[in-house]
Image (cartoon, rainbow over the protein chains, first blue to last red):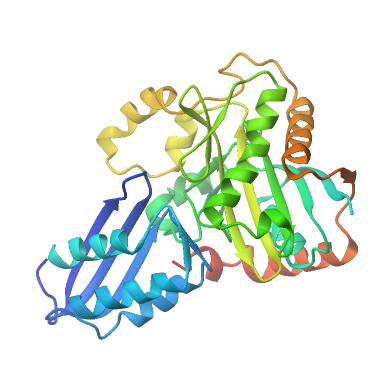
Length: 96
Length: 249
């Protein structure tokens, strides 16, 4: 997507095998994440951890983000989605 | 200790969600509650964007409550007379609460499968958090796991008004709306569509028996305590009735 003030915005709706939906919106400057939001009908426990994930991705590039998502999923419990789904949806949004 | 049974009636969305959370926070043992919604409401999952999921203008014009749940999962239209809603609270030490989320969905949704069996309907657990009859969804549930224990709430569809549901819930593509309404009976069913002529009380009785059986707990009729109602009142004002909570994502 075209950059405004140097910030590009990407979004993706990713249907996880099994049916859950991850909707990602990401704002980045030359591939460095400024803000990201994950919405959807998945389950993560504790729920509040999603904000730690979103905040923790700020300042990272694609490769740093993928490692962060892997580490994040080691310490939370999820149902219907896993780290590969989040990485896939994030990749699609960044590449838009 | 017997499981507390709270047979509740119709309430606004903020009260329903606030009381579920209050029962979870203050529990000193397992609780089972049945309830419904007045006015009808749309609840969205914890991770959803309210603006992406709900036509807020339509909800306001129809007098439908819109609320964010403490639990994940998808957006649900809670039709006043179209469903029986349940919640189950298990303290953190309870055997069924020690399971993983995936395992406990199967155990707890087993209560709904059992209830449908009591009503003469052959149902099964499907996916992560659904119960299906003949491959069609009849019940969805969502749970949260906190330091106080596990709360799972969910619905059992009694009747279905797809045209109302899809006027409130946003669809991915407007051109698909009519098709989605027309085709919903390929994916979803309800007790009425299965030809079951049971009263709401019959359905609630079956749920009580079903959950009692799968959890191995006797149910004892109870009411929310003064402390639970006070906490629910506080949560209604500060959380579930607030724009900050409902629009937080």
